[in-house]
Length: 466
Ligand code: ZN
Ligand code: MN
Image (cartoon, rainbow, N blue to C red; front, side, top):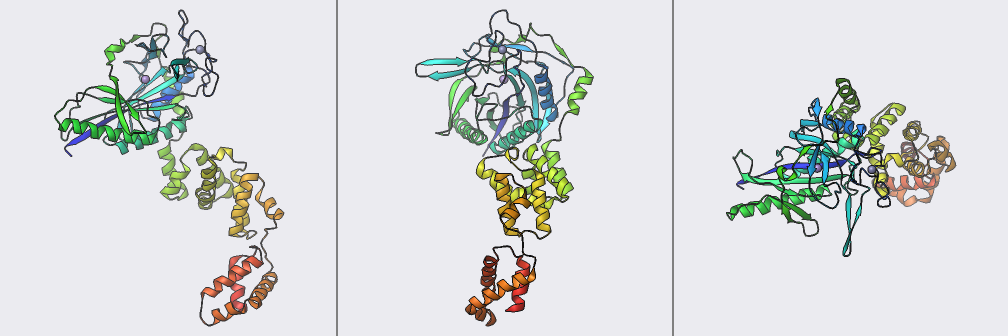
């Protein structure tokens, strides 16, 4: 291939602040009755004035810091003018030439800017009419723009997954693409290999709602554009949509330029001058970020990269693990149960560790009982599955279900004798050299002792008595 893709990303993230960006209306609109979270300001009524939600702009800066951005001392809001029915003011309050954060980097991809703006209302098409819900209007929205330094669809997907993980670590947005709290817009162009200047055009694909679809839309665009260039055609600057059923992109409109938006400083809001102390305070509130946590888990707990990745997928899982290690004193067994039985249960039920009726102390207690030989390995799984649904303590489950291990050798000997006398053929087979017969007998003895005898004890006594 003589061409290479040039890809940049624009990501919109809704902050989960209590109130909206410029008014006191409740920001959480999901599932609410339409037009119940509104006021003159977010309805864009004449004369209504905006006031800044300080929490939102601190969180915007926090996102910028997590992406290694510079935070300029001076910043301001601007009006982005355009006419669309979901925008009753006729403009969106956004940031133009002095965003809160700029020049960051993540995974070797430059971050152009991170700025603060407000969400628009939501159009709902029903038959011949279009309805509008203003609950979403004015919800704080952060836009993250990368430099066009991404070179493949796979790289774009991995970048976005990491970005989502980081913002979730910051606990400032759900980044839930199905609910629209994270929206992805890749812009794609291609150029001849070896060419260093940027292509003269850019094709933006709007509002994609899954990582998989971003990957597919980018791949589709790369191929479509290369085909056109090879035919000697010019590619127009435009905005396209993505049809996930047909897996194609389609033209929506020719792209607006910044000039079309007639940006100018928002006259109803004062410019922002950050106080150094305030910036320091925000910086101090930065949590340990995913990559650093991952490395620490590998080195501090001697975990495999696989287990460490799994346990640092989100902060709740990571905290659950570390709490377990604190209580039990060892990392490996906690990691094994979490990446095995616990993960299986969470996957099957679609739950997270926050939904569990048990605490890390429950798992630690189970591990203690296993260590002391009070429960067998196979019964420990039974106990685990019981406690994870009932929330009961492992020791109470063990005594309730009569799963306490047999520690009295004579009781095991009795069971071995019984099984041997009932299975003379297997005995003979073993003595004549068929080693598999031993496994058969062990299975019978386990059944006879209801799984309550330790396997190593059974083995030892059986070899003695056979
Ligand atoms: Zn409002
Ligand atoms: Mn935007």
